[in-house]
Image (tube, rainbow, N blue to C red; front, side, top):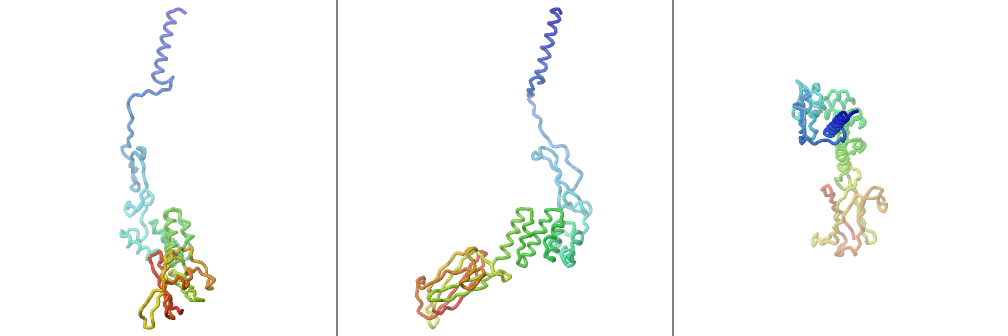
Length: 319
């Protein structure tokens, strides 16, 4: 091969390597051309479905999102249910005012379904919440929260359990088993708080005070709205007063306030009680600010519950 041919081959090789380097085929180094590609949303994200919200923004990385709608009217007589336009077929679905709609559903569906002890009427209801409430109404009639398991949608099933628990709370029964089945954490927490409503004290069920060997013993029990024994945080104020034979010249012999917690209520075998009671600390003559000068006096008790209610009792003492 002569020198001219060799020289020509060398020139071609140099040009080939140079071209490859510029395009990055050899070094794999991307060349910055100085131009940034600006992301933009498509000209339209309309999916031709009136039961979806058509969105696009930087949060969606400039991609179309079609979010299902709930409850909006659609078509001629329809309502959006999870992105699908469902024709309204029940007798109450076209009532606009929520209070009027609820009254209609109670009359047309909830009460009849409960009386029939069947959810067949409930399945005619379009709105998910009303559908769930109807199921709960049947469950309350049967005293069976498991009826809610017949609802496929989890969110609606939660509504059913919550409505069932609220119905039980109306008759002062805490349906904790229903609350436990709720999947939504916040809704479940609210449901569990119904226990405080159910067992909240409304008065003093029992109160006893007596004097034995110069010591004053006393206790109290609280009751809820159903008359059952309950407990509560709060305070107990004890006041012992005495007046002369004419009912005048009243003086305080003893006055004290005690902080009370639910854990302080316990069985009181010394009073022959197995129920949960608060035993008031024993009062002796040394505890009094003034000694009795008459043979009798009055023992006053006030319990201030943490729900804002106050209950009082009084008992005559013979010293």
